[in-house]
Structure formats: structure tokens, C-alpha cells
Image (cartoon, rainbow, N blue to C red; front, side):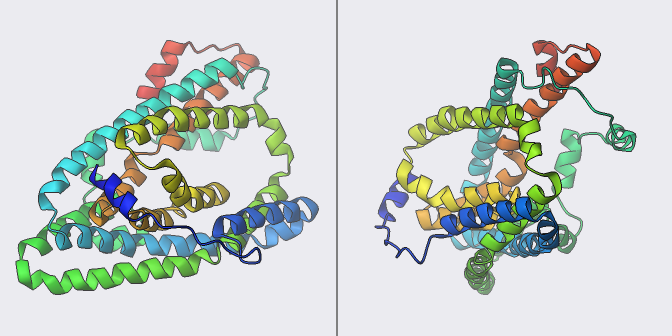
Length: 351
């Protein structure tokens, strides 16, 4: 309720831009289309400009560590929100588990309804890739908990390990708050760093249409439009499942939390388009954090929940993995006569 009231108080009338100064979302969409056309007409150009996409993604990655660190420290130590951290963390993790499980079951339901893998013949597979997958194993709960606490925060920042950065930042913020007046200079420094990183994010976003266009040009130039045709049914099933997830799950959350829908949609429009166009959630995190603060969400909530969700609340990835795994199983049924029942699918997803 507090977040809703603050968002309502922060609502402002949108300033109408002249036609020759389109919004960032419009610029990104233009870059997406232009890049696709370039990759289709001149694949060699599409390959040649891919380095621009890498530059953009690298700049975005450079923002995440200092932005997350400074935002969490200011939000927790500056606001004195020590008691709220524990409750907020528990609520966030419960929410993450519920919506991620919902995404899993929605993905399974849609892929079993549309059956995009039936009729698809599996091609020869790279045995080296299979051998690599077989040697890997998912982390256990204990391993995940141990991994969350870095032996070196510098190393965690260099690698861009958001979970470790969040864990260190929370503990550091608690220590800053505990020393009282002596910690005030640190809080002021982190406040300045946070503002600088948000401004730096705005500068990097000016390059977004070029980075997005380069990514699309490379994709179409190397794989062609045929990749969309060959996997068209899977792609349509994925977007159908995502729409259902957004309408049912996010719609319910928005209704319960009384979030103003139009204002929220306007705030997340640019980060969503950016993540879609670059196929990288990292590219959207700094802009999404900035958008939520402008929307009126308290800084300590933005700084803690969003980076943590980046590690634990991968709803889209979960939904796609459910679809993709069963898609391969359905294709295997076509090619080799191997069938996977719905019960086996659930066990596979949950384990």
C-alpha cells in the first residue's frame, strides 16, 4: 500500500515529444527493424557490425556492480531500514518461488496443448556439446547458499555475479548503519555514486538503438529468416505462454498490490523493449531500477529486490526451459519413438 501511494504521488503528466525526437522505445524499435533489414539484404554487413552490440552489452555490464552496490547501501543504511530487510527478503523469496513455479506449469500446459515438437525431425547432434552437458550438474541448495557469499567482492564485481554483490552490499550496509555518525560520509558517498551511475546509464542508453540494430543484423545475417520459420510454432507457443503468464500472474499481482497499471506499463516499456531486442536481461536491469525509483518505489526495495530477482526470479527463462525441454522430447518422439508423459515432465522440471 505504501508503494502504491508513493507511486500515485509521483505521477506526472507526460511531456509530448515532437515527432523528430522519438522516445527511446521508438528509437530501439527503429534500430531493431533497420538492423533486421541490413542483416537480410547484406549478411556480411550484419556480421561486420556485431562488435557494436558487444560494446553496448559491455557498457551495460559495467554499470550493474556499482549501481547495485550504491543503491543497496543508500537504501538500507541511509533510510535505517534494518528491520525491514529480513521481512522484505522473506516476502521476496516466497514471491519468487510462487511465480516461478506458476511460470513452470504454464509453460508445460501450453507446450502440451500446442505440441510444437511433433513432426520435427532431430538433426545430427554435436557430441562434444552433449558430453559437456553431461559433465555439468545443477547446484544444490547448500552450494547456492555458499556461492552467495563472495571470498572477494572485487572478484564478484569483475565477474558480474549479482547475487554475491547483493549479499555483500546488504552486509556492508548493515555495518555502515551500525557505526552511526561515522558511517554518514559513506552513505553520502554512495548517494553521489548512485546518482552518477544513473546519469551514466542515461548516456549508455543513447547507444541502445545502435547496439540493438547490430545484434539484430548479426542474428538475421548469420541465421537468416529461416530460423524463424523452422521454429515458428515453438516461438508462437512461447509468446502465447508469456502472454498468458503476464495476464494471469502479473495481472493478479497488480490487482492485489493495487499498482496503477498505465503508469507501471509506461515505466517498464523501455527496459522490456531493451531486454527483448538485445536478448539480455543484464541490459535492462540498470534502466529498470531507475524506472522503479522514478515511479516512487522506495530505494531500499528497488536496490534489494530487483538484483535478487535477477538471480532467483527468472520467470521467462523458467517458462522457456519448460517449453524447450518438452519440445525436444516431442521431437525425439517423432524421430526415435520415445515418449515422455506429463508426470515425467513435472518430475523433470521440479528436479
